[in-house]
Image (cartoon, rainbow, N blue to C red):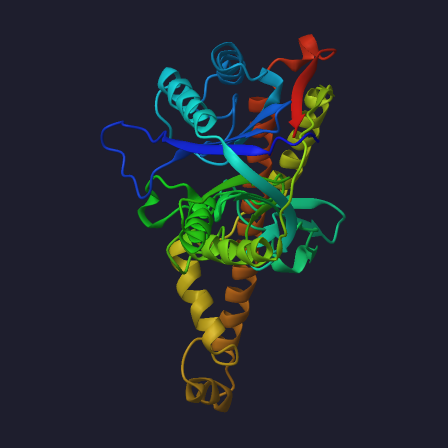
Length: 398
């Protein structure tokens, strides 16, 4: 590297929706980090949106539009722009491009000499692989769209990635300018009341920025979070709150941040375009799910119980399996006069409860099958006609 010093600049824009009636817990941001080594300029954008197209409220042309305008107006090649998504609810599409571009522009204008270093942190207390491994060799994904599997069918958990990848940029004249940290986990907990929030990365970044002070900016990059989710994702005993795990992540990242030594660095940009073939077996997979559904339906035979009668019976038998119907002296009295009416009634109720519980478990499995069928049909509409096509995804590594 020549004698010129690595430079970096940061800026952020509020990209929270202005839609009336939406409750906002904490604002969403587009955070921009521009890095310049005198030869190459790159942009790292951390955005509080759930995805860059297809499955959220961001227009499909957002990325090419943003990259095109950054290249045309700021002189930074579009393939030098790395954009990360984490959460949503955003402002309108045109305004989103303008605000994001403005953050990059201001970051470029604020370039200052820096040194850079990297490190790795660790956090494994609040993430879980949401696809449970079952004893029959299959998997069952933890989702709100369907129940969890029966406990006696779960064999083990899948792997997780607890590492926190960290980059630290220090101003040459003192203090930390920016921290980029990477962690793999879905953002699904939210906050009590379901208000708009940047979720656990927002709270983690807040911890990092407040601790480092001096205007330091923390940019969260989502890792390979496909099957990673919060372990409390389906907790029904406490209000949903992403702040505690977010603060855990922030503190764990800070441990790694403090150990990093920074120095001069050069930049390099690698661009890889991946051709991801679309699935061609969707009709066959749907047929398999339909057959599985029909097979389960056959097992749902009649039972004399309803939910109203099942619940009190179940509680009584759980509280005292030996004498569920009444006090023990009633059973003793029956036996003393040569009768077994209560025992016979208990046995019949237990058979009916077993049928009802089996139907409940079948219903839960049917709900999961219906969800899987809906997911496949929704994500792959009409794929039979264009099964030879591929999705092309552009990946930029800085």
